[in-house]
Amino acid sequence: MDYRDKLCVLYDGEDNEYAAEARQVKIIFHPESKNLEKYIEQNQDKHIYIELKTENYTLDNMKRLQGLKSFDNWTLQIPVSMILDKKKKVDNNKFNVIKDCCNKYMFTDMIGNWEVLQFIKALKPSEVYVTNMLGFALENVSLELDGSIEGIRVICNYAQSAWEDSNDLTKFFIRPEDMEAYNKSYITGFEFSGDNPIQEVCYKVYKRGYWYGDLKELIIGFKDSVDSRCLPPNFGYYRANCKKRCITGRNCGVCEAMRTVSEKLKENNTQVIPPAKQKKGE
Image (cartoon, rainbow, N blue to C red; front, side):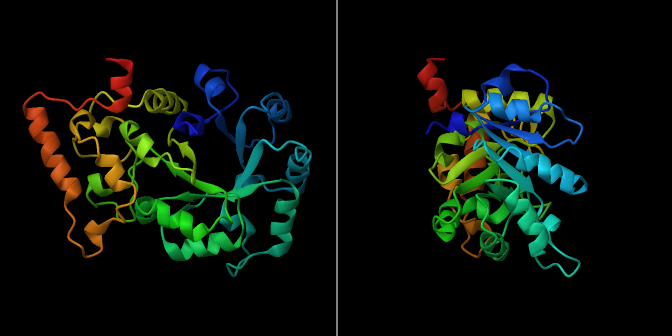
């Protein structure tokens, strides 16, 4: 599948070109919204992710969502905390109510370590969000899910790390130029962090397949100055399954070496032409 069909954008009810074009759309459930049912019915060619906030868990809202079970083009998203009791154990009664109101469900929690992945896997969601260390071991994550879960979803435009002050270049994020490196069968969705203007920019840039400048202008939380146009073309292919050896005692310095290359190229006013740009003959 073309990775562009896996780009997912936030939709807030306003008609716009990028949300109309995207094959995947995310909606935040609002009880006062009167158009949810109509939108689900009229967009059978999209897959829609409906995020339910904790404060909106009511039996009336559950019944409303249950009325949409005749449609297969949507997945309910909830935080894990919604189904836990005061002792942090699964409240099966509440969990069953949620499962009864939808055909597919998943959790909004970003999974960054193997232990949490095992816990989430046992809850049998349709997909999982992966972040931090696991973002550098996506193939291994897929093997661990062993087909019991349909796929993995990732946030592209956010520098993700369990340690805020870690090296920006070794945080988990995906450049537009690297989308093909991550476009595997086990990746079911590429999402973006941010409000609607950010969503629109990201959708257009990632669909195009390359960024015109500094990563800190595109990747939220990225503070270093690194020109995306000067990074080697194998940057994403290396990071996709490197297992972040730089912090697991294996003394890997590839990301820093690539930074050095990018700085030299920039000094010489030289840019790497990404494959997407080559195809367009630009």
